[in-house]
Image (cartoon, rainbow, N blue to C red; front, side, top):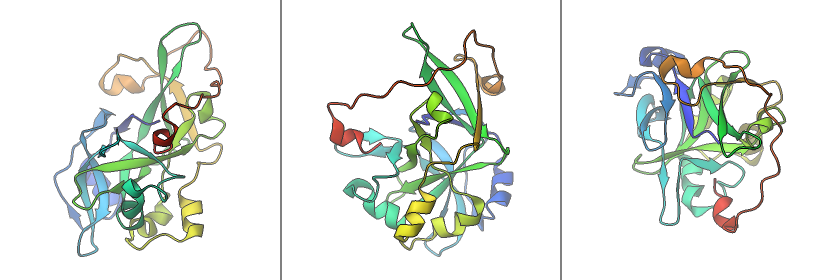
Length: 229
């Protein structure tokens, strides 16, 4: 559920798109951005100004370590509750990757996913008090994406960036509207080479068979921990 993503715009362009007041050193273009690395993020600083900065994409807790948090549960878990209420951020992405099992094998096929309208994605994120870790949120996938994976990243539309970054807690109505599964028709996707690098990671390849609908996922024995991400 979004363990890798791309960000192919120059940082100066990100600063323009997000209308930041200040830009700190951030990683540049990346075609295979992975958890634990510092990633470009947009948040408010102590004075309330919008800043483009870098945050470590991994949430470390005594009981778990993960880059994603389940959007439907962040309000209930102490590990995320305060950050979701007061420390929200946006993570720019031009697309992301998911893998789906190849029937009859132990292998998985990688797919690249981007917005149908070609616009930038702004993943919904949250960070801790000293900005030493950050997680992005996911929700159950819509019908289209569930062909590949049962979860999908939450992203925030530009018209809601200001409210999402505001440190005031979201109302119940806002939580329901903003932290939600993207509607059908939001994304397009295609298979890509598992071992490619750089721009070649985005090149469509031909498969003998189209992706098959995923089978229902069995609940883990660690059900409580699984509810987190």
